[in-house]
Amino acid sequence: MHKKRSAYLCPTCSDRMLLIPMATEDEEFDIDYCRNCASFWFSNGKLDRLPTDRAGEIPNRMDPDQLARETGALVEVQEVRRRSAEDEPTEMWTHIIVMMGLPVEENHPSHKQPLATWSIAALCTVVIPITLTYPGSLVYNLGFIPNEPFRYGGINLLTSFFTHGCWAHLFGNIYSLCVFGDNVEERLGVRSYLLMLLAGSIAGTLAHSLFDSRSGVPLIGVSDSISAIIVYYALQFPRERLCFLL
Image (tube, rainbow, N blue to C red):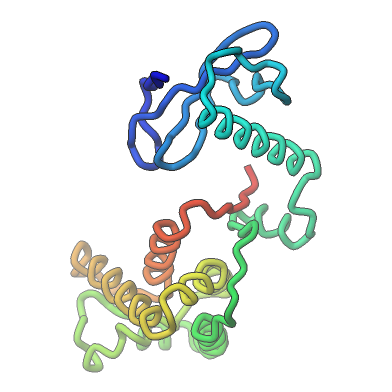
């Protein structure tokens, strides 16, 4: 059977999508399907127009492959609707977190204890009370300053990693580290994971210094390493679900 090609490219893989015919009692329409990603894409209110059973099927227009894909899509749509009606997630802490604009993983637990991630979070938490006791001098001495890149033998590339300016700064970074870092640590192993964190920190610091080499403002925090973790997470776990408050 000839498959009609969509006018649109898949937003994920950029392959040309296919058109899958659908019908209700009142109308016929097509939905876009990416064969490479095994994903359906809905536009112009098509999601709400889908039939909830097979009664709206167009006779003699579907091969077994299309029927299987369509049935799977309808099951997925019904599951999304069910979960939406139940107002998931129900835990109070998840509502508080998403109201702050932070992501919550829907279901991707790590199977091993992320000892490296927890150790880094604990060390950053231990350092910040000391930093806040002497906020000016310690941040200046522990942070990386672009116009003095080689002071203290360059050790500031490492000390700046564990230094944060306030509790909110620490919480945002440590939360993201724990949400994404446990799965990345499990996938990479501790050694490669730590090397990626170090490389991300050095690359981010040096890139900032390159564009602002005359700055005397200290660079602190693990944001550049967390950016590396999030990019790796997105590439390795592209189908994982994250909850946000919209």
